[in-house]
Image 1 (cartoon, rainbow, N blue to C red):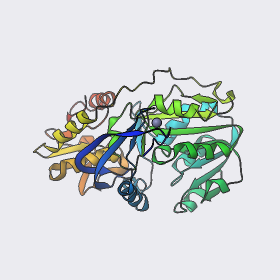
Image 2: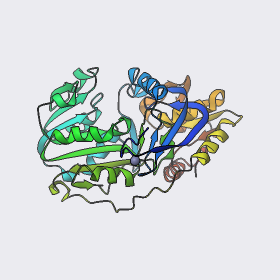
Image 3: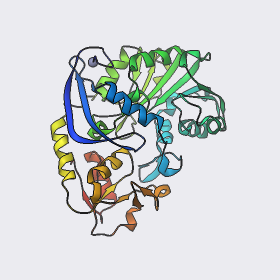
Image 4: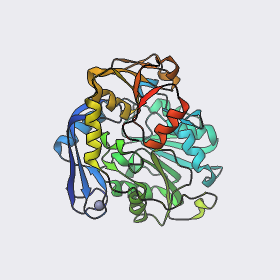
Length: 365
Ligand SMILES: [Zn+2]
């Protein structure tokens, strides 16, 4: 198979011995991760073959958005104040946006991003697009939403000042062709807002089965520059993720502080990562997991019968069950419990500081 972003030759970089992966909808799968790396651009990507596509399609067909929080968006803790990811993201880029315009949100799902945008900008015309109409009514009920599109992107006749694709690009088998389509839907000075997970900060992203691409800052910027004159990496970024603004015009970035070009993520130690997962699997006592995201779910699956319960700070999840185990709030946890903290080192440290009385195991520190 050739590289999904530059079409050069790829080599198998890693095949996991563990038969476990997680979907981005938090479903567990008995699949061996197979990771390829491009010999030219170094892009890390899933091995795309028929067995991968079958499993990925199955995840997609049964996809259940934010099941645990009843369709509410996952909450991030920034400066100790819980906010939705979308509202933080909009805050991070809002200095680049005019007071009015038209926005198309691609892969809009249940409209979480449009809702957050509508809350902050009342004079924009908003549009949603998705591959199915499951959430059409919910999306069109959001204040400011003018229409909902489904089917082929090419068939959309409107042109937009802003197009957002939040956590979409990493799922796409042909990201270049996809970005070109979005570019054709922009007005001349229009801006494309891209949000993807950052493998450079978060190696755990590898276990998310339906993430075809594992971008880092360096390669997503290089890749985007092939298609857009102006590529802007805002200074304010959500941890573990990359926000990019792309345009043919530079006007939009005038008011925006830009991140420094420290883009490199270094090389990925796949075998070292697998060794860590095997160590977790060999834990032989009841252990809890912090977080009910796909990564937390994956670690719950790794622990198997030794999974005690989940811990989450998101109050909408407390008291519910995940993988048939209880979800507890940090202050409900008995102090002698051991809790896995599968977060990148800097975030793991912040959580440990915030919750000093809990006993954590940090897989990667
Ligand atoms: Zn490549």
